[in-house]
Each structure stands twice: as structure tokens, then as C-alpha cells.
Length: 288
Image (tube, rainbow, N blue to C red; front, top):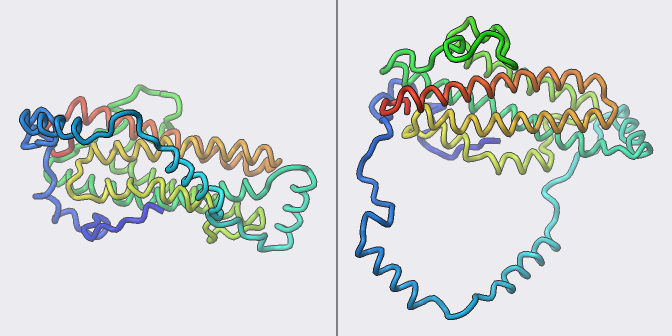
């Protein structure tokens, strides 16, 4: 997931090569707004009025065509059959009891893809952070300068380390979540290397996040804004996965997933605090 097609991807660019590329987001020569050209806006408005059909435009044919496509289209992939005898037995029991093991495995596959992509996302963010820090010093303060002791959801370890150490901690936890989910998939008799339908969909939905963080032109604040989107999605995904595991009677998995959710909640707190700090305290710098 988070596939990046940029030839200038930061994952492969040394921080030193970026020092003269990143610039602060300042007032410049942007002329995309209509107010930049009163005469051009007037001409466009006149052309629109002259060329727009009178009366309501009938969109029913286009809607009918999309509905027909939806009815005829095949599903986006499928859930692989259980890879082990134990998995086949679990699936059979789930069907008898009315539970959907396929849905649980699909959502585990989704989270596997997301955590793998999240690791790559933090790799790219660390590169961006190092590039900005070379010119500006410590652009992100440690958490203990931004939050009060005992803030709900933030482990005490965060309050005794630098921003870079916290970023690397988060990156490591994303990797551990990937392996946790892979083990959970195997426990259910599934194959963690298979791309499930939800894994496929989430890859498409989040492809732009890595493109933001790996673009040499984006600032650290813009990247943290993308990270906040990822972390909000990640937290919601874990909450749903916990509910599905509970419904399936997978008590051990529920306990493990709750631990991962707690760590993801801490990731979100850190990212939100850093983003707020940059846009309120470091405006008109390379980081913003």
C-alpha cells in the first residue's frame, strides 16, 4: 500500500540533497484564484452563461450507466481459503455459529497492509525531518514540552525522549503491529501475504499520503497533516477490528489488538501536538 510513483521519492534521496529544495509556505505568485484576474473572470462567466443549456441538465442516463456498471462488476478480489486444517475447522465453526470469519480475516488483511504502509510512511517522514533539521536544528520539540504529565493516552516513555527518538519509536511500533497482525492471520488459518479485498481498497484510498510525504516540495507541517489523516484512519480501523474479533470470540486477539490500539492512540496524540506546534509557533519557516 501507499505505492509511490514519484521518481524523486524521498525514500531514495539523501537529506543533503533536499536542503535547497524545501521552502517555507509564504505569500508568492499564486494566481489560481478568480480575484487575480477580474477581466478573465468576467469573460469566463459570460462564456458560461452563453454556453450553458437552458433549463435543468438531465443526468439520469449517466446515473443509470453507473448503476449498470455496479450491478455487472465483479468483486475486488476475494478472501483466500484457509491455508491450514485448523483454519478450515475454525471457518466451519464460525459458519455454524453464524459468525463471519471471512470478514475478520479481510479486516486483518486490511490492517496488515496499512501497518506495512505506515512503516514506509514514517521512514519517509524521518527523512523529511532529518532534511529540515539539518538547516534549522531541532524543529520538533520533545513531547514533554508540549503536553502535561500524565496526559491520557500518552505513555511516560514519550516524555523522556527527543522528537527523533519518538518518531523512531512510532516507526518501530508500526512494524510490530504488522507482525502482530501477521501472526493473528496465521492463527486463524489464513495467509498474511495474501492481499484481501479491503487491503486492496485501502491501498487505493491512501496512496496519496506517501506521495505527500515523499514530495521534496512539501514542508514538515504538511507532512504531519498527512500523518494525522493516516493516524485517524488507523485508530478507527483498530477499533473496528477489535469489535470484529470480540464478535468472533477471539479473546486473545482482542487483548493483543487493544494493546496496539493504545499505541496508535499515542501516535495520534504526538502527531497532533507536533502539527499544532509547527503551524502556531513556526510559521514562515522551512518546517511550515
